[in-house]
Each structure stands twice: as C-alpha cells, then as structure tokens.
Amino acid sequence: MNKDLIIKAGKAVLKNAARNILITEKKLDNNFVEAVNILKRRKGKIIAVGIGKSGIIANKFSSTISSTGNLCIFVHPTEAFHGDFGKINEKDVLVIFCHSGETKEIIDFLMFCKQKNKNIKIISITSKFDSTISLMSNVTLTTWVEEEHADPRFKLIPTTSASVTLALSDALIISLQTINKFQAHRFYKNHPGGHIGEISRNYN
Image 1: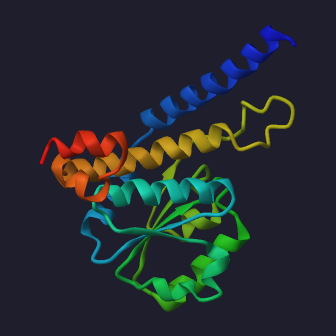
Image 2: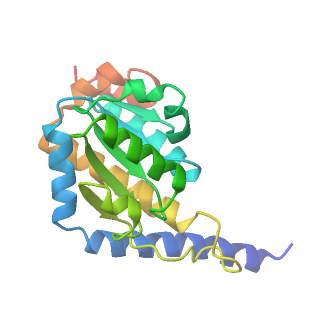
C-alpha cells in the first residue's frame, strides 16, 4: 500500500473540485439572476432532467429544492418518450443537467417537449455556453469545467464536473430560497425526519 500516493490522489480530487467551484463562483453573472427569477415567476412545477451522473445530480436537486417548498419532480429524458411527457406542461420550468450540452437523449427530449409546450421555460446547467442544449434554453448556467482534472490518466470520469454542477445547483436553490424569504419553521413541514427535522421542529 502506497500511503503517499493514495493521499496525493485524494487531495488532487478535492483541490480540483474546490478550484473549479471558485472559478464558477467568480463568473456568476446576470444569467444566474435570470435563472432565479424564472424559477421565482413560474406558475407550475420545476422539472429536473438529466441522464447518467448528471441525472443523479438532477435527482438530488429535485429533492433539495422540494424540501424548501418548491414542487419539483425528476423526469428521465428517455422515460419521457414512454409516457412521462404527460407530467410536463408549459407552465412548468425545465432545469436541464448536462455537462457536455450535447447529449442526444436530452436534445431529443427538448425538441419534443418544446413542440408540445411552446412557451415552456428552460434553464440549462452545462460547461458549454454555446452547446446545442444551451442554445435551446432560455438561460444557461455555465460550470466552467473543461476537463476532468481529477482523473489524471484519461480525464473521463465525472468528478470535478459533478462537484461543480452540484455546488452550482445548490447555489440556485439557496438563492431562490433567499428571495422567497423562506422560514425555518416551514422546512419542518417538508422535512420532519432525522436530525434536521428535530432542529427545524424547534422553530415551530
């Protein structure tokens, strides 16, 4: 067992995640403001969409933002073609998670969804502001991650990109919560279990 090699590899992952999160933080602009305002003004649900590792982050986003009192459901882009388009209407807001911005399943999903719901608003979270998915969106939040630096040999394994996307989606949730003046006692109604539930119950 090479202790130094193991520690070095672990630190590299954490350092690259932290560095790229800070780069993304410095580049937050009016697109972020517009994304929060779109979510604030919506008349329907929030629909989180992603596939693969991005789909897992979309699920986490859906769970977290729902706990703050904003109805959100996750829709898998492939399952949508087998009935789940019925869960979506043009009053909803789509939040698309796709690192490359070029995933075919999501592009096909967006094309059909926009045909069915012509006025639906779309927020995308991707590393490419000029990608196909970005150009199909009303607003794009860019993660500013070009390579998976934490995967030193192949730069393929979703590591840095996943960390930055997760952090940016949390920033979106908390910013919306802030302008909605969310109160801690309301959190208990959505999250009564666990240690967090015990703490939030004290605010009632």
